[in-house]
Length: 188
Image (tube, rainbow, N blue to C red; front, top):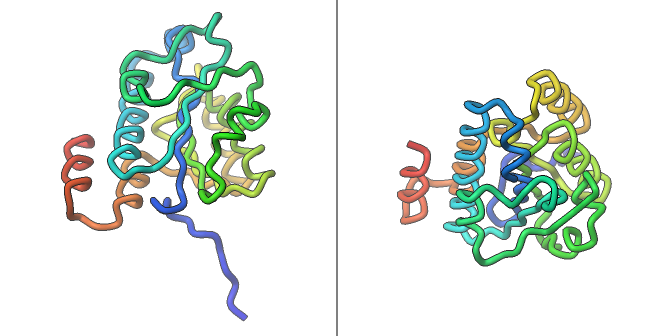
């Protein structure tokens, strides 16, 4: 009998993207150069999801204290309202669970902070039966050691640790069509 392993590639028919807590005041506490890369990669993921008609979610952790979503991210999400939360794990927020698409078994996570909200959300998503991908170059923590520790823990828990280009090209599957041309321009 063959052993059926989970699909280790992001599948555009099974994926839903969640961009977690990409907020102004939180971003100002991050290493500046790394934050610019993470914001760019979150933007690429969001634009790619939209081009491929993939569902996506956006969260804000205590926006009264941590501010609104970064303008460059918010500008890409005009059709959805961010899910406000106080819990670190998005899964503990009823609105987040309600907006998870039932027929999407893969959740792609990006945002901040890797060792708090991303980690707790990923572990809770696994607990409810989702396959979780964390996009390493689209997550950040204030301290590199915390991010690296979180990624190691997530890998041990069965999370697929990936990167922005891998995700978008796995979603595409082929190097043809209008979506491919648009996405190729995004990653240049």
